[in-house]
Length: 355
Length: 104
Image (cartoon, rainbow over all chains, first blue to last red):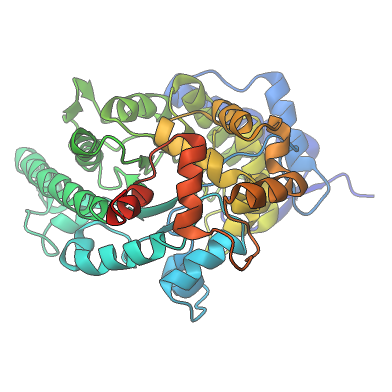
C-alpha cells in the first residue's frame, strides 16, 4: 500500500506526495504569507487540520454539517451559456434560463448576471438593455440576484480608451505622466461605476458586485472605493460587494490614497478595513495561485491571508475561489478534488463568512 | 467548479435557508454566525436546522418563502421575496419597486 497522498500542483497537474512533503509545503506556504503580510502563521493545530483535509482519502470533501457558509458568485450563471473564454459550457440557454437553473437546480445561495465582457465600461452604452434584462429576471428569482462586473481600468487607456497609456509611459521614464494618466482614468472609471449602479438601482437592483478591483493597480482600486462611497450616499440600502484582484494592491501609481491610507501594497486584512470604511457590505479576498507550487503550499498561504482578513473585519469576508484564486488550480477546468479541499479549508480554518 | 463549491460548503440556497442568510449578509453586513442566528430566530428553528432540507422544506412551503421544486399556486420570485423581506425585516429593493408599482 502506497503512503503517498494524491494532490495537485497549482496548475492542476496531479502528483503524489509523502505526508512529510505536504506538511513541509503547508509550513512554507503559511510562513510565506505571514512574512509578506505581517500576520500570524497558522498554528500547529491549524496546519495539522489543513493536512487532514488534504489527506482525506475521498475524491471530494465537504465542510462539517452546521459549518456551511454563503456562496456568492461572479456571474456563474454565465458559465452555462458562454464559451471557453468565460469558462462556459456553451449550453443554449437565455440569461433568464441560466439564472433560474443556477438558483433552482444547483441550489446556489445567490445568483447574478453581468455583461459578457464582464467589465463596467462596455455596460454604459447598453445600460438600458442590461436594466431591462435585470428587471425582468429579478421578478422571477427568489434568492438574492446581483449585477456584477470588473472595474477594469485598463480599458480607459489608449488605444481602447481616452487616456494616455500608463504602461507605455512608465518604461520611458515618464512617471509623472503615467501617474497623471492613471488619475484621469480613475476619474472616468469612478463615474462609469456610479452611472451603472444608479441606473440599475432605478429598476430595483438587489445588489451590485465590483469584482476584481485593483486589476490595473491602486488607482483602479481607488475608483471602486470612491464609487461605493458615492453610491451609498444616495442609495444606502443598495448592497455592494467588492472583491480584490490579488493578495496585495498593486502599486502601479504608488501614491493614491483613500481617507488618508495609501492603497499600494495593502494586504487582505488591510483591504477589508478600507472597504468597510467606504461602505462595502461584503468583501471578497483574492489570493493568486502559484502554478509552480503545490495545492498544499498555495492553500496554506491563502488560508493564512483569509484568516487574518476574517479576524480583522467587521463585515462578512468571502474568499474568492475561481480559477487560479485562493488555492484553486490555475486552469480552465479545475479538478474537483482540489476545489472541494480549498472550499473546506477556507471555511473551516480560514473562518471565511462565505465564498 | 461552482457546483463543487456549492456541494462542499454552500448553505443550499432556496433548498434550505441559504438565500435568507445571504440577505442578512447583504443588507445588514452580518458575519456568518450572526446572520444564521438571526434567521434561525425568525424561523423558530435551531441554527443547525437551517441547512436541513427535511425541516426547511416544510417551513418554506408554510411561510410562502418559495420552494426549490415548483408548486403550482405557491409564491415564488418577487412574491416570495416580498414575504422574505417582511419575515426578516430587511429592505429588498426589487420588492420595494414592485410594491410602489402596486401603489402600496
